[in-house]
Length: 447
Image (tube, rainbow, N blue to C red; front, side, top):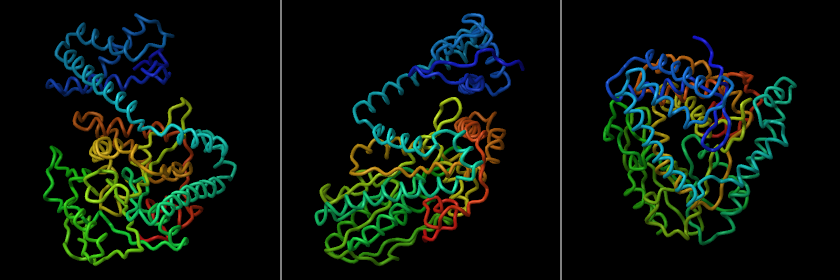
């Protein structure tokens, strides 16, 4: 198949990115399957026809916009006798536009993107010569990778310490400190490190593991893949959590459940705990910002620390590693030894994770008291060494599976981003108390 002379396109935000024929083929394939089609090869043939029309209409050296490409897809499908697919594509395009408009409205209202923090992170990366894949590769080649690890861990530790000081400043009014954030953002390690800082300051605390409040897995509905949606906050026994929180703040003794992730079952009344008047409760939870989690406790008694992988590393085309993709890599490793899941199972389950995050976590970012960045520039070369082999396999498995296009596109995106990066197989230079150890193993902490 000949290469397309068009090299770049213009996105809706005005940025220029590399042209990708496969994205057109995937969009056509998804539209076709929605009306009964199942031929990926035909979708790819149509993508080539779209390219021919783009070159004819705009020229081989042109840089068409996303909208111009979509218009060409519609007209090409109709011209080539795929009217039903064209109609499905038009409907899909309209729905995407409506959702995009709503997202833009929400961001403008709540400012869910921490722009100031992102700018600080980018400046830090620039100062430490690790803002691009090429920069990382040079650090590795020059033997300076251990220096980057030390600097990154120090930066993170200082942020955690500053967060702990914010908690201390609000004592004794605050009784509950919530460490919240999306999946694999390193809430557990951050909770441990916050507790260390509180202990150093003489502040007494008790930690509660909210994961033990999951309902039995067989109580959850399954989708068409037989997959469980345990990412929703309603997979947790919110009523029991609130009952126990109130009891603890009243000085009563409770017995929390115990949840076994490998069997998907819980046992009630297992772990006895209480909270004294001079102690604060630490909660490490994916859904710590979800109001139903702690609705029984007044806001003045809660401190909300939010953690996210706000990484700012870009490739040769200027495309940044997505925060969620960074966390996906972490979880693919952790799930394999903590939840008895294979990496590709984690990849196909990730659509649940993202759906829940966008609904139950991201909208509440504006309510937090403090924000910590857990992205480590050095982690990507280490994660690549452990996981890169799975992405070509995923691309081959899901490329022609209409129901797994989310997994296919995600695998393709991560593969293309990591491909030019030098991998680091030897992780001995990562300290035992590094947050990355939460995912790759070998930590000095017990999880």
